Image 1: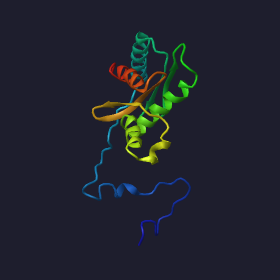
Image 2 (image 1 turned 120 degrees about the vertical axis):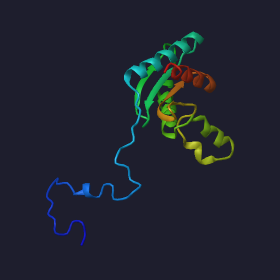
Image 3 (image 1 turned 90 degrees about the vertical axis):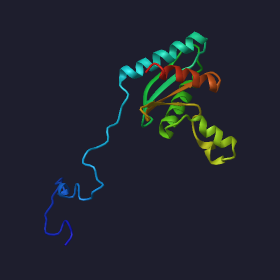
Image 4 (image 1 turned 60 degrees about the horizontal axis):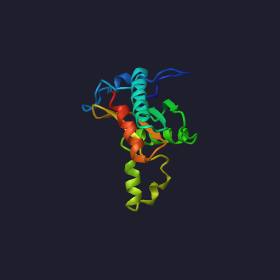
Length: 158
């Protein structure tokens, strides 16, 4: 007899799954907790990154995304090229989804892994809290190493 035999369900009725929870010894009845960036965190990161860029005289765009790569913050400093506002979020997005600095993809390409040529943004920096990626920062407008320097300066504000 299947689980649904002899039981009638209509519309949005729920399946009686509660009797199956904990049926396997390895199952946990609690869900994992995930740390998330709050607006105050994002503003701190952005302010520190902006201060670092202005202090060096660099005109850049700064993007901050959450762990899913969704844009939380984008700002283009005075004098930054309009295209930087497109590249910075792509860098952050790639880093957040890969959960590592997106420079690693450039290293793979340089090592002969041609399949990574389609990766959209290089040199984003993930925001790691207790070993968990909660987002990433992407900066565009100067040399890639300087972009990453600005991103790290922002993250250090946490």
